[in-house]
Length: 186
Length: 76
Image (cartoon, rainbow over all chains, first blue to last red):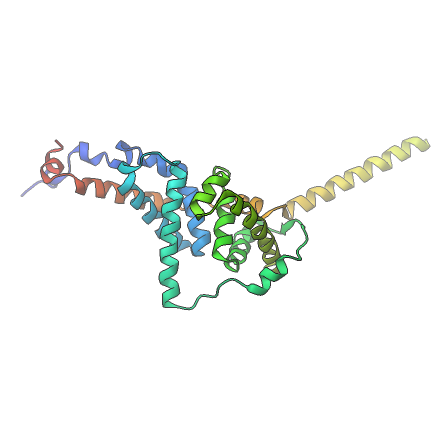
């Protein structure tokens, strides 16, 4: 009878690509940002987990071709944005998902620059999700990317396919729309 | 005696204000901008540990499958 150990992979193969390629370090550095983006775009923890897994596996497949023309974070964000957009498009195709609240966006112009208040940290995530859900996709993405201090306006512009000046202009409106919606989620 | 009682009252009022401020701080959060509140939320939202295990397994499996069969067997 054959010994089970006979069919085990050699030690050199068992030390996986995670360690030998340095991809584990890439994951450690960027997983939080990618997971958070996926979570707030998709609005579902399980879907965000799956999306984060898929984004990093896609990134690993292209890791050897990554030439460092952009920062790794920006490269990963691009993969994540495309992945989440594809998921959302397939969901939209299957069921009607309400879009941005036009009335809310009209009200946003009348919002004062009041602080955003929340009673407890545990309710914060839910309120942010409800707020982002009623914003147009463009505003949602801008706010999430700009909140990452490691991205410059130029990088955000590149990721959203517009000029840095356009980002600044839209960001102002996005912040006001967020503030208006956030108050309503209280 | 008058200045002393005044000092005590001032000190008590200051302490009360500090206590009220501390209570307000502990019972609520305040953010000036959307960026600030999102950044705070992101910092409080770590990815579940199981994602790392899943990605690690997938990456290691994909890399192993890329190797020719004889390298997988002999580690050459």
